[in-house]
Image (cartoon, rainbow, N blue to C red; front, side):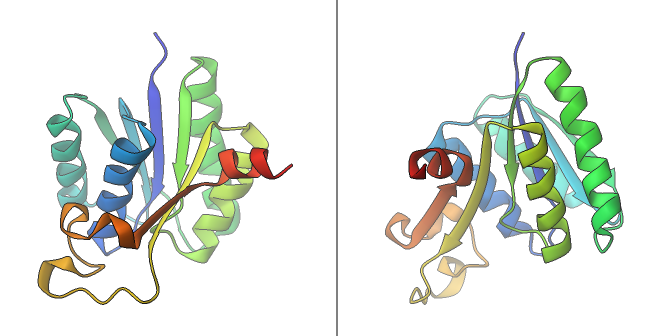
Length: 163
C-alpha cells in the first residue's frame, strides 16, 4: 500500500520542524506514515514530539532518525538519495521539508529531491514583519501563530505552475 513519506533536516529549534510538519498536514493535506529526520546525532526528544503530532492526526506514523554529517554536502545528498530510492521502490508519495535545515543540508535535500522527482518540497516561513509575543513567536507552536502570517510553499507544485 502506498504511504506518505516526509523527509526533514534537523534543526536545534524543534518548533521549525514540528511547525512545518503541522503546516504540511493542515494546509497541504500531507499526512505522513513515515518521517525521516536527517541530523548529526539522534535527538530522542524531537522524535517523540513528532510522534506526538502524528498520533494527534491518527497517523500512527513511524519516525526514523538518520545520522549524517549535516556540514557535508556529499554525505547529506548520498544519505537522502538512499532513502528516496528505497521509498520510491514502494511507490510511496514523498515530501521533503527544507524549512529547518542548514544551507548545506538544504542544498543536498533539494538536489536529491530534484534528481529523484519527489512529489513535494515544502518550505514554511513567517512574514518578515510578524512580531509575536510569548508562545506566538516564530519559536512557538504553529497553532498559536496566526495563519495569516505563515507561508508554506510547495516548491514542486509552484515550479510546475510556473512553467
